[in-house]
Image (cartoon, rainbow, N blue to C red):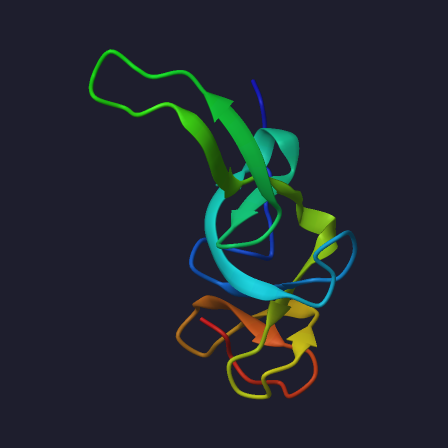
Length: 109
């Protein structure tokens, strides 16, 4: 039985790349790939793919699309202080577990 990995980053979060060719750029997380510790971020880590025309009206040619980025190279951007920040967890009075910004202590979820 395989254990589900837990990330501090979720789909639709705004993240900043902290290492690699796109360092300093930010975008929205489109998809997480837990088995490979990677995420696909909108308009970042673009690669060119040579595609053959498909049988169902897909056009061939050179396509540009996002490639996965290692999760450790991404940092969540806090919506309140608009800085890349580390993420912590705390349990609120109504027993909800939420993420919070370690810089400004603001709840993210």
